[in-house]
Image (spheres, rainbow, N blue to C red):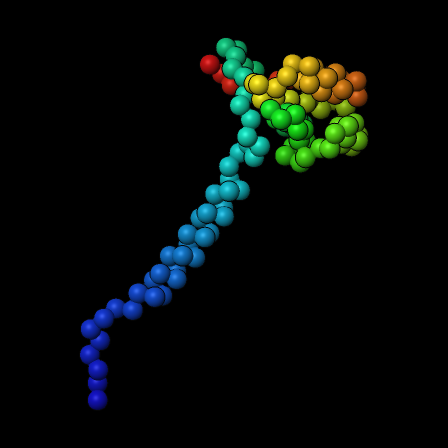
Length: 124
């Protein structure tokens, strides 16, 4: 006794599509650059760097991050002790950050012996 198949089983198709959707969504979160949301200031002249600098991010709330790793208050010197002093440091500061906080972070970085400290901006 043979049965004619008059319907298509779509459950395996849906399972495969859901797995592909999960893979795409999880990899898309790792691809995005600039994990910490910061509104950078704008400038007419922007310099291009060839080496990989140390990136320090200063958010509008005043939080500090070293290469996307949070730094506790007062922990910047201990976070930078393992970094070579001749490497470049780029400060990504939100455009609404208080100037006093930005200057104190740059002063602290330069006080630790880093000579190449620059500010990351967006070209106009």
